[in-house]
Image (tube, rainbow, N blue to C red; front, side):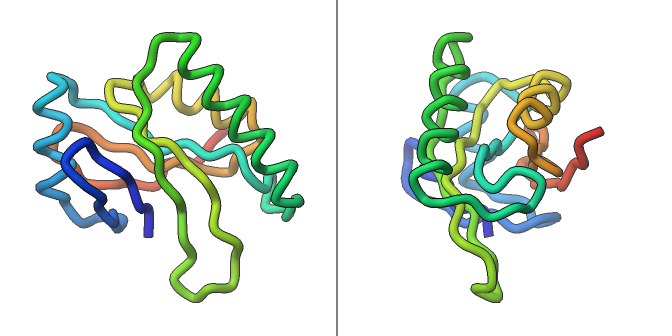
Length: 125
């Protein structure tokens, strides 16, 4: 599950399932493209909580410096076999920029979509 704190309340996104709450939040911002980014556990190698927190701060600062609004979130493994990962959903973030940032932070994939609010897994590289 990809949990996101939208301006109107929290939502749990699932790949391939449209989210009316996300659609409404995107429409309120007047944007279509969006992406969920994470900086934790690059290359699927588990790091310490402190290192993942530092990396998340670097990602957040990078997005803020570029003028992006961010909705905070957390990525959760349904099976509970992977640690929760802090993430941000970035409304209006172009897919190419999202993939560039994901690569910079060693991520294997991102979750992204358009104004229809359907989360899709997009592999980096």
